[in-house]
Length: 115
Image (tube, rainbow, N blue to C red; front, side, top):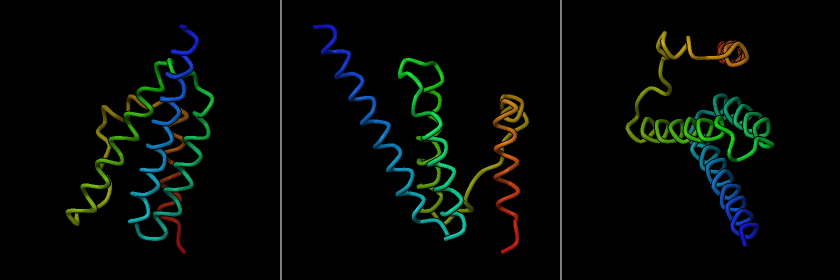
């Protein structure tokens, strides 16, 4: 009986992750073409990279929460016609791992690359 509950929990988790993934891509459709292409590429890479993480991993909850906040913030900014994005505080920057800092740098370079 516990196995059936666990399998249901896994299925619900996968469905929730897929819904979030689709929501982020849907919100990104409202971005200008260059930002959309860069954003979609990043989203696909991040979700693929975290696909094999067990659902009870501590980082999974944080990963999903961060992407939900991204989608919420971007939806609000687009609805209100505000500038897209936000600056990271020095405290947030200190919290990033070396890998995350490298990804952030790559995104920055991609965003300022001339056509």
